[in-house]
Image (cartoon, rainbow, N blue to C red; front, side, top):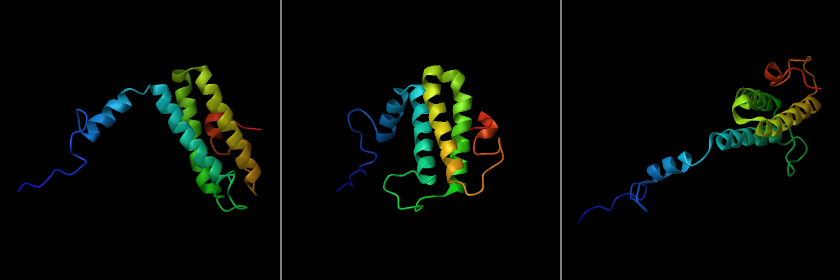
Length: 126
């Protein structure tokens, strides 16, 4: 009696799970990948800034984590903007700016102008 193959390696509809994953990602445009990554960073930063709707007062607030996420988002948006076009970049910049302002509002000790999260890439946010 032979052992059945594990389900992760059994070909389904013409290929392995890995091959299907590669085909799936190949069908996604670079703009969609960049936008998706930015949205994930924005969502995580919003939660860490205490903006989650279901959060108890300050339950998810973690400004150290928010700073890292916002800075990463600023770097991504700044670097990708010339490549993804103004239409896409504008929406990402607006979201980034909103997060930077939310961070400032949540912070008990404000950063100096230009020293806030992501401001190395965006310049001072007011």
